[in-house]
Length: 175
Image 1 (spheres, rainbow, N blue to C red):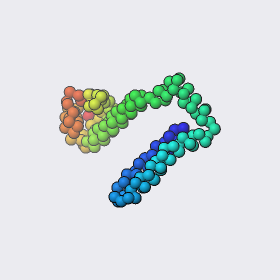
Image 2 (image 1 turned 60 degrees about the vertical axis):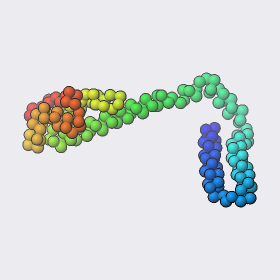
Image 3 (image 1 turned 180 degrees about the vertical axis):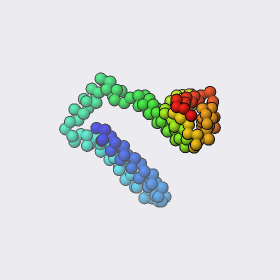
Image 4 (image 1 turned 45 degrees about the vertical axis):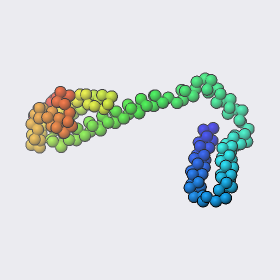
């Protein structure tokens, strides 16, 4: 049933585009009214054809009764859960954003010679970082210009323009 409706909508869109195109190229002559009559007949056929196709099928009564049963049982509202879909989309987007930020932070710290164990990030509804907790294993003094936890916090502050009070770095391994 839905396929029939989709086909009908696409046919109507094609006819609409065709009519617009014809209106643009028709010269202002006596033939204009005949062309518009022909376009009207094509439009009527396009509008009525799905109904004719539906009547050709023997299971019209079954289709109509199924739609009525779905509406009376409230199944239509259950099938289309827009709010749930939006919530899942937001949640997935927030998780993806958070994971990408964690990966970026980890790669930039590793470029500085810092071995990162874990990163925990807490995001607000507007995707602002509320708190960033980084657990580092060790700082490689030979590679890194960052020699202590305070310099790591300052580095993250400079790179991501994040408030210092929102950054917490914990060092588990020795220097």
